[in-house]
Length: 508
Image (cartoon, rainbow, N blue to C red; front, side, top):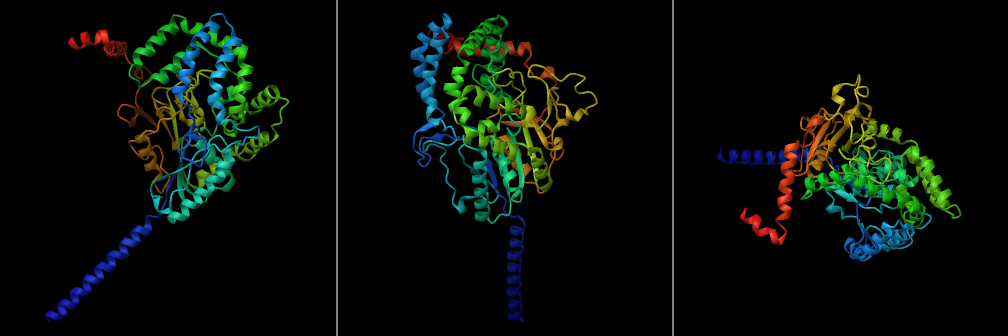
């Protein structure tokens, strides 16, 4: 009898272990592999002198210490030329200063790389690719986005093969959205489970269209507004921004803008032809980020006015190919993707645009217009709010608490999130957490799926947190007393760093 019980116990144990193994295998099989590929944006990776050598010289971003040293040497000559409005001399000095730092990144007139420069990127080994984590796709952000899309296609197939995954998720940022759109246009979405378009330039960016049309202009307010963007979060942000604002009110920035516009009027064509054209004008990616309505005027400016006698047939062919194969059908491509996969759109706002064109008041993330990154939201100017007529008959749930954004006009209004006060290039961990959660869903999530992630969010840089945005227009700025307090605190901190005053502040 005891022997019989032992045999039964042994058989039962074997059965339990077998069942456990089967259940584990079933559970693992249910969680099918689905890696997330991250496609970075414009200037999202260093350009190297030799793309095959990770230790070769970085040619972009340029060596700012060396450039600053060169500029310091020429300050007396620059100031002298500026004071007497000698724009020809000023332009010659300025061009000769920056050109050596830009030239290594120039492309040929056909939009190809004349040397071996580029982004260093090698495929990770199959075992290094997480089945449910992120892997980065690297590409040269100067080149034709349709070429980069083919490279992305090959990488997606490699990732799927390496992980036995049927589909992948994609997070794309800025220009990365253009590359992903080009991929979808060429290869469809059979391999895609979900895409998160994180402040992308699929619909363009106003300042790029302005620059390529020759619309270069400086304004006192544009300098004031953009310095708020640049200084936000720095050690003396309130002190310096209020000082700049005071200079604006006193008319000093107007004088500075007047000088800059004088230089622009005199040297614009020369600067465009000698610096901007061989750089940005030959980068196919720049052309892909021009808004639809500006493409024709930009081509006329560059090809007919700046270089009418130069043969750029190949480059124009690449531009036209993108316009016909990707740009023309982008809404339909996105709608098809939305039917077949999960789609999420993250749009950032709270800042003015680049301060060198007439579009500087456009509400943006500091780089790309919010109306474009959201795929069609209606927005106010940076320094205004939507009027009563603009939000009339629009359900309150679509209007941002600060009354700057109307989300009802978005292509995918229920799948579009707006994050206030997060700069374009900032890779915030809290935002990554949100995007990972969205892409982890089997079914399409919406702005109503997660209580912590409603349609309108606000970012806190000090704590790296996202929270529901509930602030009204008058509540988004510091009160006068709080602002005054911060100015005095930062002034005290600044003065305490002066050796002659440091002991005095320590005693205080």
